[in-house]
Amino acid sequence: MRFFPREEKFFEFFENAGEKIENGIVALIELLDNFTDIETKVRKIKDIEHESDNITHSTIEKLNKTFITPFDREDIHELITKMDDILDFVEAVSQRIWLYRIEKPNEEVKQLAYTLLKAVKELRLAIKELKNLKNSQIILAKCIEINRLENEGDQLLRKAIANLFLNTSDPITIIKLKEIYETIEFSIDRCEDVANIIEGIVLKNA
Image (cartoon, rainbow, N blue to C red; front, side, top):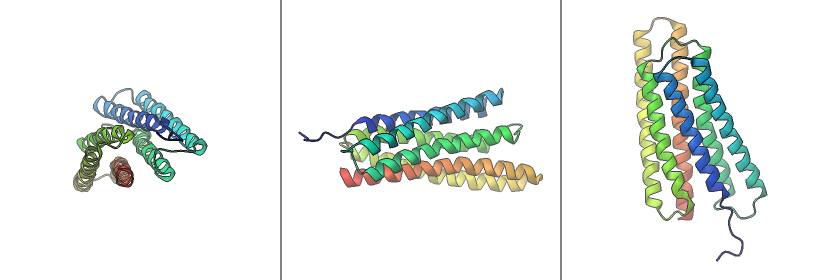
């Protein structure tokens, strides 16, 4: 029995943040697959991103007021802020699609978005197991899969950019699409960052 019980609210924050991230990516894919009413769909993603920001702020506020935390304070802060970054990049992608007046998303954009969604699904499963760390091998396996998906995202990005320069003559279009590709990949990179933080937590506390 702990004399000072640890604060369990953080796990709820992490799981809620993971849910918002997945909701935002699903909304982005809905935008890409059904390219109509763009402004409304972009606004929906912005609203989800705002809800995620609120979770991040609540987590940090709770962290500053909590005496006993489930694991290192620095890890809690870094975990929730890196998770928030994932959705920030997703929202940035949707804004660029709207502001740049993209006529129709190509398959490269969709492939990157689906890879991001797969990474986030694995991330949510890893986060769910953080409560007790009894299933540390499951958590570490999810982290390895996220790293694999990040490598897959890198390969898709290189292929997309190569095809862009090979098949597109308009330099403005090249600039627009290259930035969109890279922003989705930044989001996938953040998934790997979060996975690395989770792996560190497991190794320190399991």
